[in-house]
Image (tube, one colour):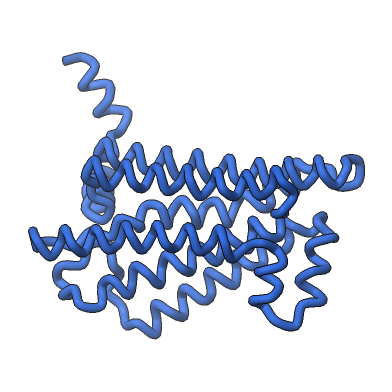
Length: 238
């Protein structure tokens, strides 16, 4: 490993420090529970690619808001992994990213005409989300995120030192899923040749499978302290 690579890895480990076993276990259970609930809704015909894509973007927004609210009373010097930039600039950057993710998701669900029509005819966004069955799984995901952040705040209030946002690494995985999974599923699903039931189930399985696997893998890597191949090889020789 070059010196510059070592410096970058040290900065990455500082931004995403190793979580406590209890916190890591709760995050893993949250990932499995939320994904399982979404998969159940797909299985019983109460969810769709449009709903899953909307959930992914809204969950990312909700996690960001929860994490930022949790840091309001934390001194800037104690905040780990927070960009040192004015809040308006951060919000503008987030708005651009969210707009891009919405565009990617909208293109990715193009074959789901039945549920795209729900969005087109809706005059109230909340009513559309309710009809698509997005609000209930979203409420579950945000409740679990809030519990995780509250636990981080309680831990920080007792021990002080740097405040670590336990949602940060999960946010990376959620962003990658929302950016990649819709188009990957769109490419792999044959909407014209397959039945609507098969196409919807396959699209959702690709998205949810990528979401669950990616989040769990990144959480596990973070929990291990972000080891590299050279570190693993070295430890295997000892």
